[in-house]
Image (cartoon, rainbow, N blue to C red):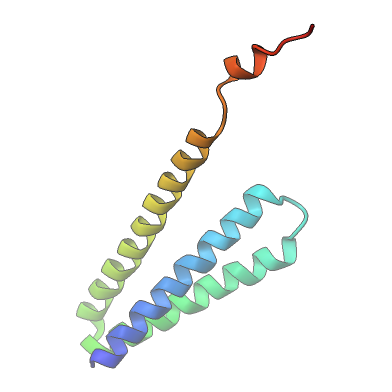
Length: 106
């Protein structure tokens, strides 16, 4: 039972990783990587279904579904928090627009 729950956690993490990779590719490389987006979306769905199956086999249908919801929501919330923190780091490293304009035209 514990092995199935750990497998479900790993599949949930892989599903969220694929989901984030698909969104990143769609936002930053629109039109350039249509085929990998399809593969990332497919991988996300398949890993999510494997995680659901592992949870349902380990804890039966109702409790397994609840566990799957908790696993997926915790993985997604971790990914969202990580993305926000990464975005804040990128914003701190950029120069304000006033600093760029102080050099000006001589």
